[in-house]
Image (cartoon, rainbow, N blue to C red; front, top):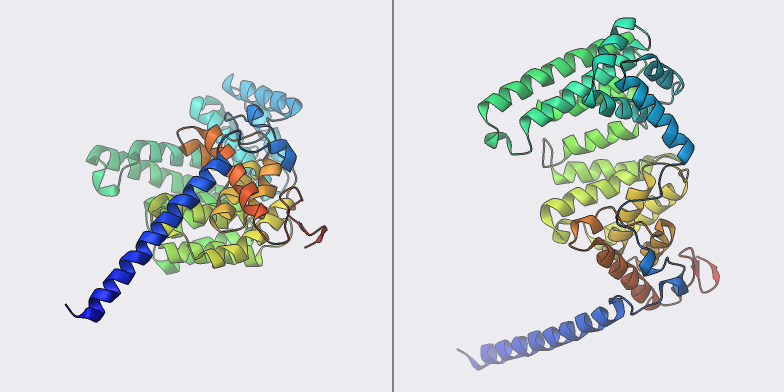
Length: 380
């Protein structure tokens, strides 16, 4: 071994030793700063640690709304269908709202569906009734299949899955004929495509049916995102490109930029943090996602879970001030991913808040006690 090589190896070992020592000191320092009780949440506009609640992602539903939905559910389970039809009629042509209502009715039908059979027979709100039945069959298809990989599904389950999937597609087509303007049946068909992969040309045509009727349909985009992911019939790159396009092109007031958070979540679930796109790329897009979420109504049911994801990925991406602002908006609720995947969600959530405070304090010109949109006492 030559003297130059020996010297080079010695230098490399010395550098690695220094890096490990620095890394150990840094971890210990951050551990002290982010340990429970090491910071005062109220000093930074955060809820006290003792008030954290892991039972919910966000605030509970308003009492009046909860009672209305309970009455609707009770009516359906008792065999009535008129309340369900009126519930759908009241949504008008707000396609996102109609889909949310269809989602509730599908969950009710999963418990007991005699009322759904009577509703379909009545012909009232026929497309909605058929879409609920198609979604119910799709739900039962996935339950029959199970969660394993395709090669792991037993033959009898695979046969039941295919039969239910075919029935769901057939009824979704009937729903589409009953109301040609409704994107809901086409979203069901996009969802069903995960179980019966299509060529790129056929999927683009199917997706075009959704966007022709509702270009910003949130649930439709969510289902397309899943189809395009590597877990199903696409790739990480295709899924991420689809989500990034949503951030760039969504109009004001649209929840679609939240797709980017869902894409990051899927990548993290499959590959860990190392599977996420470059931090610089994330830092450029996450503030735009935050702006989109800020424009949503505070009562939007999707908002709490998206805020949790935004806080998490902002921290991972070197945007602690953005994470801190989300933690202020979230309040005491920590019953959402990623905290619920931890052994102690409250502790994990509290440490993340403390880390956001600590790192924001290290950002030049930024005080952790200020709102995230202000730097040095002036608007950023």
